[in-house]
Amino acid sequence: MRDLANKQRLLKTFIELVHINSPSFEEREIGAYLIKRLEQAGCSVLVQEYDRSFNVIGVKRGERTEAAPLLLSAHMDTIEPTEGIRITVDDEMVRSAGGTVLGSDDKSAIAQILEALDVIQEQNLSHGDIEVVFSSAEEKGLFGAKNLDCRSIRSRHAIVMDSSGSVGNIIVGAPTHITYKMLISGRPAHAGIEPEQGLSAIRVAAEVITAVPDGRIDSETTANIGIIRGGTATNVVPKEVVLHGEIRSHCDGVLTATRDLIFDTARKIAARRGVTIDIMEHEEYKTFRLREDGPFMEMMKEAFRRCGIEPALVLTGGGSDANIFNQNGICAVNISTGMQRVHSTDEFILKKDLYAGCQILLECIILHSSLRRDT
View 1: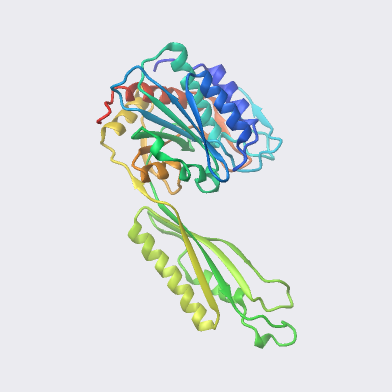
View 2: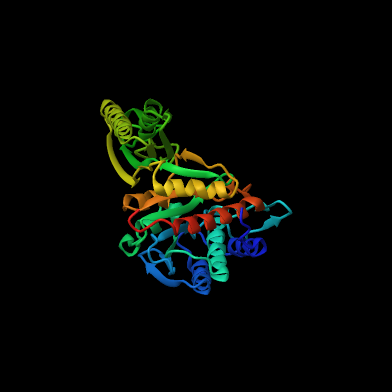
């Protein structure tokens, strides 16, 4: 493995990033930081605004004009709580000191990308064109990627760095994800004087929840009702309840069948109990499944092996900006950055994984420069 990245600078960049508070839709401060760093690394920078936030796009031109351009992607936002973040750094890891998340999701990826660009600049490494997208509000539903003008992206291959676990995973498939809302409307009445005049929306909702498929449906499909809201007081037969749920599947046929079963079951129960039900659904993102033997994937696997890591090709039950890129005709893999126990106050990253993720990225950039534009 070539020792290319500067470990001290990489760690310093990561620590600087995690101390910038950047919850979803509040990315201005980190955006300004990234614009400056991209320009220092020799990139031209475009800020693409949309109604709620913005994306930062950098382009670093390469002298290998015959090489296919490569897109690198990470997201700027973090889940909360991050206000007043405190971290602990020891010989092995960087972790949250408790009370907040660390923010390695996805600032470990940002640090790895910035370090890779700095190394390329300093060592004058030969490369093709590199495009960088730092998206916003990924944690709230991939908002930045969904609002990205993909027509401005020339790359047909992308490395999205937004997977947790030890460095070594290559995500080759992710599910379609739909969310839904059910509004159950009953009839209110005084619970102590004439409860028989009411139709309890809560009792109907409870019957729906217990009757519909839930949890793991099969090896590629899950369903969940995660939010229930309703009722106004203990002395009122509740008039309305709202249920929020989701379904995910790598197989669109199974997803459709599961959705239809859930919705049909809910409607039958509502009709039998004499209440009304309105159901609204929304597709968050579409599934993708990448070829494991194509030139791009073979290049990715070789980059890992050059760093002494045997890659694991895995499917995930979660979504990322890679889903959106693949929907838009860009072959995008999602790789692990080393972040662990994300979305919790126990979040951490091992220094060796932070460094290894950057080394792998540099190898990917170097190897990708051998792929021609028509590959």
